[in-house]
Amino acid sequence: MYETNDNYIPRVIEKQKNIALIAHDFKKAELVDWCRENKAILERHFLVGTGTTARIISEKTGLPVRGFNSGPLGGDQQIGARIVEGRIDMVIFFSDPLSAQPHDPDVKALLRIAQVYDIPIANNRSTADFLITSEYMNAEYTHYVVNFKKSISERAETLPVDEQ
Image 1 (cartoon, rainbow, N blue to C red):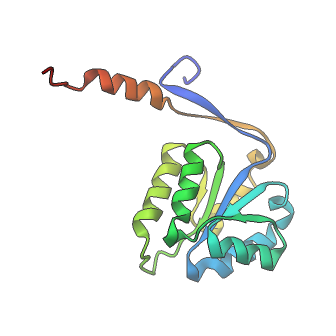
Image 2: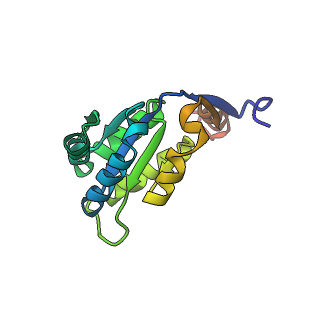
């Protein structure tokens, strides 16, 4: 379907993945435990995370995690920008559905951009377990995303322009 349709373009997720690790405050300990349990897998990939989460994971597991700003200070947006650039392949985000988050719009924007770019995302431990044990974790994977350049170009041609 996709190969003959220029509305979609292939994006390759390499064998060595770029994985973003994020957790709300009440889920940080759970994410640290999950990282500890999956250290042998995670250490074969490049890891990034939002502020405190990245620091805690590094300290508690010994895994190298490149830290960005904390979520409320733009870290979610930094990771979202890297998804757009093709520099994040997977997101593990242990979110807390029972606590209000002051940066909820940023979280929603991150989740939306992951969906737009067809990035695997886990919002809880069981989904993260399924992703990390997938046969695709040790292989290159090609997925197809909307050809946004073509879409924008076509949209621009159909917009009414006032000729003055």
